[in-house]
Length: 188
Length: 205
Image 1 (cartoon, each protein chain N blue to C red):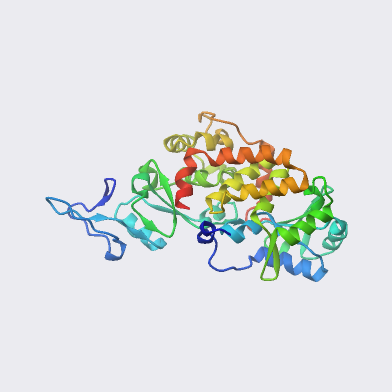
Image 2: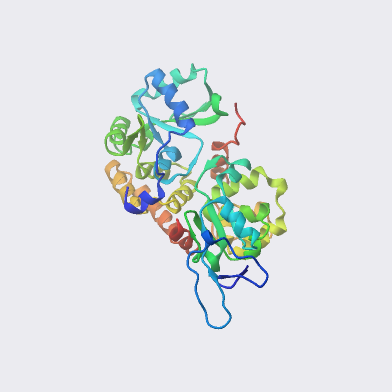
């Protein structure tokens, strides 16, 4: 599959399963099938990924496993060109740089989290400091235009080259949030 | 809850294990309390951190702390005169914060604030009383760490809680005479909510 503002099957590729097609559209000339995928489960996301569609389901389990115990409804991260073409019960998280979703690593997921819960991103970053590649985090934050959110939760501590845009939250307030949310099983 | 919020809220309610654990202790001790903070917000938005915040009447605050310090299922961490932190041992040391209602009462008394909370700004679900989102937001904006809590309010709105509830926060502040402080902080929240990068997320929530 390739992303053309819509999903179009390329020669030699298997079609997406029927249940993931919402409204096939006809076009002139060579027949092309436009997909408007319906994504209802993690398995659907995996099927999209197997068809080289950059999509990723960010779950609270991932965030909890990385040190910030939280529950939230999953966000389905997709390239912004595709965001309006997907039907899903999941909340859609449009991403500017589709490459970030091909094989998302720690920096990519941290950047996704920064979009909708900067405090969680801060705590996860602090508790996984050694996993952060400053250059990769810099690149992902810049690509998504999240300098303001990154500054708010002091991501310059993890990627010093990041420009400061706007005001940072007081360090003491961030530490308070961190102390209020110890990792699972840390105090039993 | 307005129509937009209904679609974001959970389809059915389950008492979270952290809240159930705290409730069991408070019931056993016969202490009146209301769940506030993120666990109360989760009634409307399906998002919660695990820590539990509860508010008690000012007249009950000292006695509550004394009773909880004797509780084997809790470990006492610290207390600063209006807020005490315990950890619930059976579920991984989840923080349990106990707050004196007087902290948020403005020019009224702690008893009046607690009565207002119980009678006008909370709902009972499964036998447990939870503060309304606007009451939780009001308390968040009155703390000294309000900027960080403003971020949580933004996240709550992305989760589907109507930003229209900010007007109710203002009404609560007027009732307790704290509007000068709260109005300025509400302006900050509204400014944050207007950030262009949040628009696409709010549309999809």
